[in-house]
Length: 571
Image 1: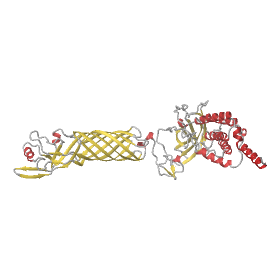
Image 2: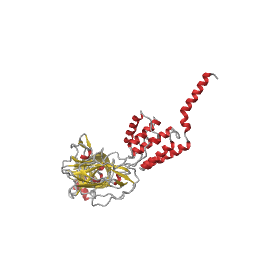
Image 3: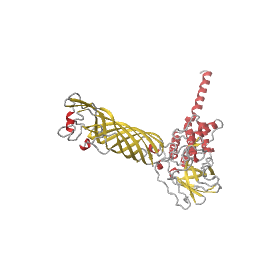
Image 4: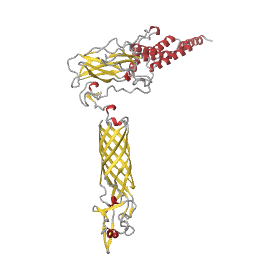
């Protein structure tokens, strides 16, 4: 072998050893043990047992050392340790350093998208900047974990307040403060943020004694970790004039699985009891499939500035939303949303009537209509032909039948029917379903008397209906804005439709052409279905516009369709 070839072979072997030695040195059993610890640690993290998760990851990192595990695993362990330290609010600075260590081992590593949050992402980006200069710290150089000091430093302000230092998980945190300022307060809120919550929430404090204000942070939002809060007091103009802490320097309460030796409580009250474990994750907690619903801490209307008023922060507004220095409109809460609705509506029928022969002519013996479709004729507001014993027989005999000259015949089709003015009463069984009734007056109805005398007509011009309505959209009945709806109903009402008819009378050889009205009398039983749109101008006032279809039966059968427009007020 030539000298050149030997040199090339030695160089290739050296390069291979340099590139693959770390993988070759990795211990399979060690990696398996470290991977098991990593999996258990992240399970602990998702169940909010952060200290156990930290201990397992640090043990895995120590087990792997500098070269007993592959670089990919060592980088993932450092990354997950950073997630636990930052996400569990244990030590943010140490968590960022763990991210730096991970990036130094594997520059291509990224956060797990299933557990990524804005805070973790911001910390990871900071670690990328730091990783550009300086080597990662060795595992044995990392400081020993310390118990998070949630209450070593508490803020000061316009309130005399001693915060609860420890509370058990899922147990309301009492907040009591005494105001020591000069400007009179009419309202005090505590803005709080429990572990895993993306946004701050409000809880109204009640006046207690001369200067005291007290309330409870809802138990459902008290999750293991650190719960932060600060106080804001408002004057009669709802302007913030007093402060106890702020977003950047809030009061802090450490929440653990252990019950405090001395249970915290409001003055003169019993200690709050622990809420039932629903099995849900903390609100918006990374990696959870669902989050706990916010608890309602007060069963009363929130106070604050109305929509459109000037504001500087969310807490000033009744809606808890300050956009572009103006309060957003308050839409209310489901607990305070109106359930009982009273309304007024109008409906118009366009009916489809059958064709018929001899619409007006009567049976000479019984004086009942010859037609079997329940048509009754009227001329000039009176029955046609008249039922008067002295003159009715002659008038009826004078009408030429449909078989001759096409007289007394209805072609059928569509025609304008009744007009309905209805009062409605509905109860919202949920945020989407209403059950109620309609009662009203019917106009444009049959003016004669013969149909009533023959018991072929619902004599009272009223409309009675039981109805169920479904409004689409999450809790649509509790919110402002537009939502489509469908309904179904049944009841009793007049369904009477007027159509024109031509008759020919022959008396003593003289012909007379007449144009009476033929009334098709259907109902009184009916079914109705329909749908349309509901626009809630306010939470307690809504307009509706839709189309209803009716199917009348009993005296006669007739379908109809028409618009329905109305409005309702909720209580």
